[in-house]
Amino acid sequence: MENQHRYPARSTAIAARLMGGEMMIMSPVNSTFFSLNEVASLIWQAADGRTSLAEIVDTRICPAFEVDRKAALQDAEEFVERLSRHGILRVSTEPVEDASDSEVPLA
Image (cartoon, rainbow, N blue to C red; front, side, top):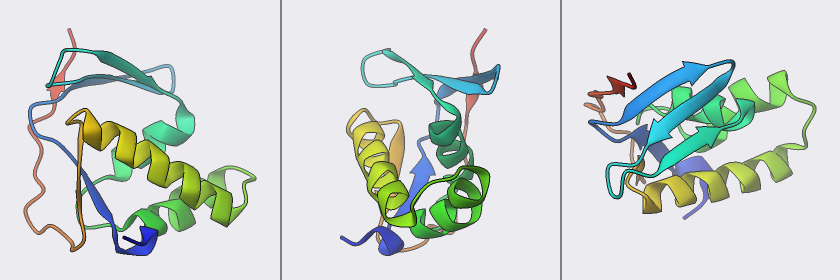
């Protein structure tokens, strides 16, 4: 599946909190905590199920960081795949109309 045809969306019932520019997320699968760096946090925040991964990289990552588009897409793809294996992100080949989240803040 090509990057520009992937639509990441945050899974529902995720516990998450933004702390000092980094997102802290707890996996619903095994309660593992993930600390996302600034780039990963931007992808996480933009993962609405309606915006393609390529668009997230083009509009959020490349303008904010001096990074090659091809390298950024590859890194974003690997990040999305890793989080989808942990049940934190869902990935679709089509935009998801109702990607509403039930994100739960961490205490």
